[in-house]
Each structure stands twice: as C-alpha cells, then as structure tokens.
Image (cartoon, rainbow, N blue to C red; front, side, top):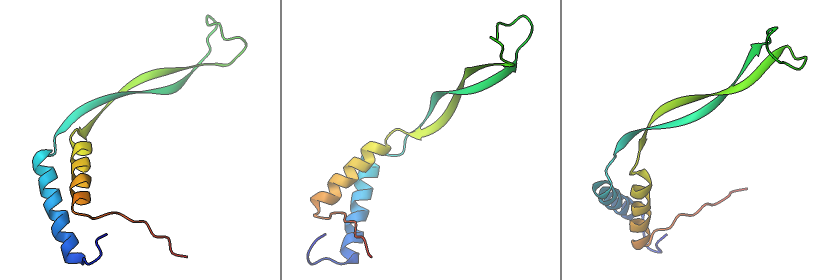
Length: 96
C-alpha cells in the first residue's frame, strides 16, 4: 500500500484499473461442457456373471453444460498488473 494514500486514492485507482481491464477484456460468456461420471447399481439377474454379488455396479458418463466467462482470467491479470503499477499491494493481516 502507498505510504501517503487514503481510501479515496485507492477508489480512484481501482476504478481506473477496472475500466481499463473491462474495456480490454469484456465479459465474454460461452457455453462449455464437461463430462462427469456417476455410479450406478443394477440388480444381478440370472444371466449375468455377478460372482455371487447381488448387484452389478458401474459408472456412466453424463455431459453437463455450463456458462463461463472466457475473459475472466485475462481481465483479472490486467487489473492486478494495473493496480501494482499504481503501487498498490494486497496484504493479509491476522488479528489475535
């Protein structure tokens, strides 16, 4: 954090960096997909080779669709670079 700065200085810097990063990397939502496997159990029939088990288990794939902002990482990286160039840093303080 700057030595002689106040909340207003930070707010101005933050706003400028947010504007810059949002102009350069605007929100760009795209539909993505992922495959997740879920377990299933089926009763063992007389024709199945179940090795003395009552159920057959397995996994089946399920495709899930979701929306993600593909510019999010780039926008955040530019914001962090901008705020750092303005000599602002982030600190974590632990209080007893």
